[in-house]
Image 1 (cartoon, rainbow, N blue to C red):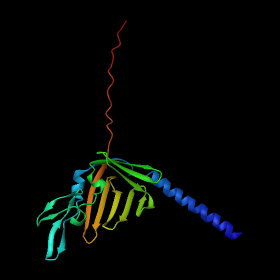
Image 2: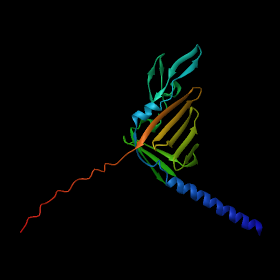
Image 3: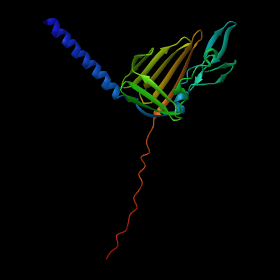
Image 4: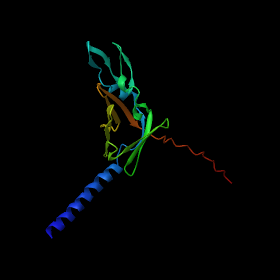
Length: 198
């Protein structure tokens, strides 16, 4: 009898926990429309790192807003040569996007029409979690490991960090900052009609 009540209580508590996190995800503050914040993106740009080659230290590479940039020493930011033919993460090519949620799926829709789905949970080798202030996903393939992180900062800017590590290569870190898109609230003034006296 005790065992029966214990199991029922455990199931009830589990349902409460699941409901809590589901509600928290549905009310996530990261959902909505976002536009690229160029100034903040430049501030958060990862510092260039030296990479070892067979001859000692090779060129330096960095990423500004996810776009590879030439640097002194012949280095180039962005994916390594081994991963050059692989698809570049969609969010790094967006100037603006919308995050929406339906059931256990979060969809990133870019202004250029491209889309990317994030399925909450552990599906198809991808581990994804959504809270009120974060969206995280990680997965590994035979050629690389990719980690996405969407996180609100203290000023409610959305900081997107993508880490890409090609097999046998060094990890590339791309950071972009987005601000909430503000709708135009300019009110159109109604014309004032003079009342004619009789």
